[in-house]
Image 1: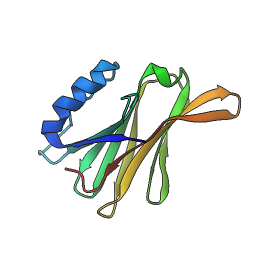
Image 2: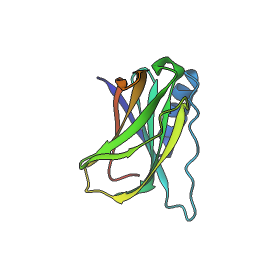
Image 3: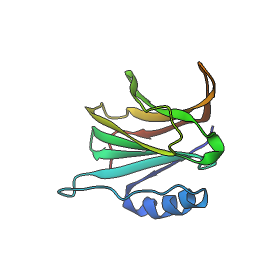
Image 4: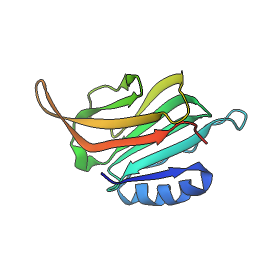
Length: 137
């Protein structure tokens, strides 16, 4: 799978334009002292995006976004070098914030995937894996 990887402020403009093309809104990085940075990646069709916020080796939270084309119901799952980090609720939301507050080794991948609900007890991963890397910024 081809992944578009963008980092830093300058890339955010290109990412916003691509994400808006499929109806995804890229929020601005929240910052209390200029230390929170956004790194994000979207799959090649821009139907699934991973917006990772933090600084250096610390990941504060992930904003998971998807387009409606991935299905009407499902859940987001973030994972990293030690396995699953967080799983979001199963619902119709196209955006979910997953609190992380962990520090990772340089070079670690922080990945996101979406599981579409098919029927009771059956989910299918759609959109592939979308990863950012540590350090952030």
